[in-house]
Image (cartoon, rainbow, N blue to C red; front, top):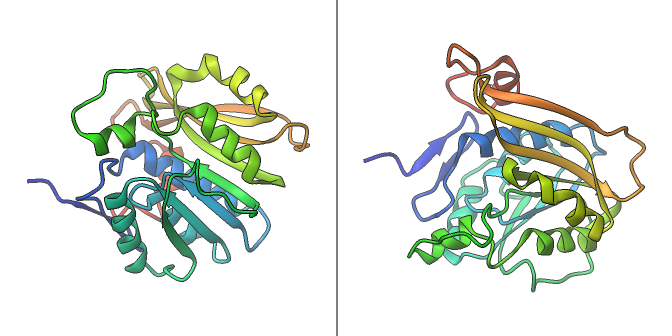
Length: 243
């Protein structure tokens, strides 16, 4: 039987009751976001939509000492487990887990940074496991709805980061335009240098806010020898025990 937890250098993620498990691409995204957040102003107000195990919030908190993170999760068991993971971490005073439907939970807060690894699939065959469906399928929160929450909750000069499947790339421009949001950076992710892209990591802002020129690049998790690539290693070195 495999472990129900994933141990990092400074924290542990228990995932036994979460439908959305720790994944390599999720870890890559968390490290990528945490590194980018270090370039922002201190004392970031962060919103993590659909936190699952709490992984992204924990990774960001490790690298950003002043960040205050509010993490929302619709699934009750996942929210309880995320709260337990946070409570056992060094950053329990800076991360709050809220069990809620992000579409219905409304405040007057604005966030400097919004992060999300949302459900990937829309209008696709689902399983008989309702928790797994909520984690992987977007019946509860479609991408258009997520972008609407981001538009409403993002500070005027704030930024957001999303992890999405590469196959949805063609529909993204229209969805972002509809919410007056724009992509400022796109990282195309491969499993190895020999594979096609399978994920997209995005950075964006309100339309017309960023003075940064749009950039696009790629990253492979492993190289041709099936070893972690230099780019992946640089991002995950402070997290993975084996690096």
